[in-house]
Amino acid sequence: MAIKKILISQETPMNVAPYEALKEKYGVQIDFMPFFLIEPLSSREFRAQRINVLDYTAIVFSARHMIDAFFRLCEELRVKVPETMKYFCTSEAVAMYLQKHIVFRKRKIFYGNGTPASVLEQIGTKHKGEKFLITTSDSSSNEALKGLFDAQKIDYSTAVFVKSVSQDLKGVDLSSYDMIVVYNPSDIKSLRENYPDFKPENTKFVTFGKQIVKAMEEAGLPIEIQAPTPEASSVAPVPWTCIWRITRTTNG
Image (cartoon, rainbow, N blue to C red; front, side):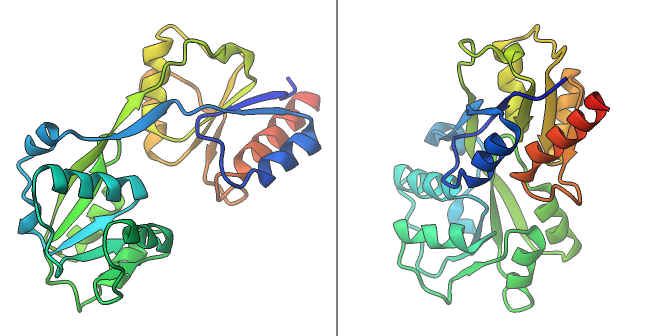
């Protein structure tokens, strides 16, 4: 079966060049459709966790929407974040986004290279004595980072600041796609809420990340290609790899 139509469960990226290259090389149609949206928790939902931000001396952010949700909730709850608060971010892009809410000061903002281990490197021995609050979503608990913190006996707590809300997909004919690329357990939750009886038949699923594998198994959905792999270490090459593998198999 040739791959001619692909659905990617995300917003259209700013850099579409890899996908345009896919279209040109393989003559495929690629559509982007987020299966869910990220929304901040309400102050009532956050209070139910019994977390007091002022009990902590350092905050860990892994995404920009976490930053927006954090400062929005602090404002709603009338929590004045002290100037002494330190911020540890998974990447420079996330760290720079803090400028939307606070004055960027190197002595209190630190960032890694995108991996949990790099965040730990920024903490080192100098900041190991801080009391950390790790921001999470309702669909991702930052298990990798928590494992590293536990191993180093770092004092931390986690708190959910954002939640995933399923999109209305009922106008999307999923069975018309030869390939669907999914990234998050919330993608599968949304798919099942919209199409509880959906059976893939000729539709191939490509997954990215470890967390979604469990969600796929629980939903009874087969995985054609699972990334990252050595030849598909980032998101963009995944459709390339899948198309190559499937067409090679089907065309002999």
